[in-house]
Each structure stands twice: as structure tokens, then as C-alpha cells.
Length: 139
Image 1 (tube, rainbow, N blue to C red):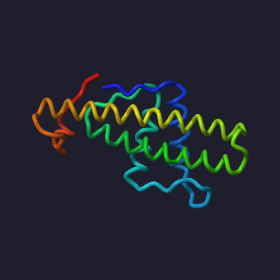
Image 2 (cartoon, rainbow, N blue to C red; image 1 turned 135 degrees about the horizontal axis):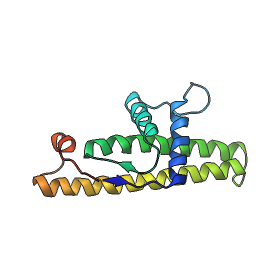
Image 3 (spheres, one colour; image 1 turned 30 degrees about the vertical axis):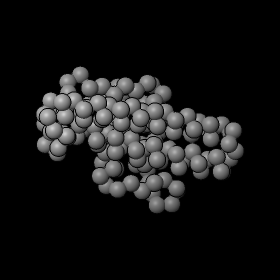
């Protein structure tokens, strides 16, 4: 299945991935758990347009990365608003980055719900670890 991302959304996600992955302990960046960091690194390599997602399990990793990126962009936006001005150019750009990431996260969650419903319809039971990995959704 395809998770659609506009150019602006892709750029915002790339900036958010940079924020997550550039943690150095003192700049206000977020320290993500290793699993989320790996998910964000994987997402960053795929940000060249729409994202093809073939399994529910793969989408869970994308969702985890999107959550980390969205949280990082939200914190970055908050810090810029406090450091500058709510209508300052940097704060406004940070707001749009956060809003774009939040929009993609919302679409990913909708897609996850759809995939879960399809798995349940095909297998006759709720999503399991096995079905999350084995049931494939081609583009």
C-alpha cells in the first residue's frame, strides 16, 4: 500500500529526522530510544516521495518513526516560539514542519487501521505478530 507524501511533507519529515538523529546531549534535541532511532534512520533513507509499505509490521516501524519525528518537530517548534516570537519566521516555518509531519502521521494511522481491518477480514482473527509480518499488501 502507498502512504502518500507531498514534497512539503517529505521535506518536513527530513528536517524532523535530522532533529531526532542529531541528538548530542545538550542542544534540546530529543533522545529517542534505539528502536525509534533505527526506525527514523530507515525512514530518512526512504524520503524521496510516497512510501510503499508492504506489511502491517513494516507500517508499525514507519508509524514509530513518524511519532518520533513529529514529537521532535513539536518540541523544536515550542523552543523556537519561546526563543523568538510566535509570529517569527523561524517559528512559523517550524509550525508548518510540525503540521506536515502530524498530517502524515495521521494518514499512517488511518492506513494502519485499514490494513488491520483487511488482515482481520482475510484471516478471520485480529492482527497477530505472525499475520503482521506475513500478510503482504502490494501497491
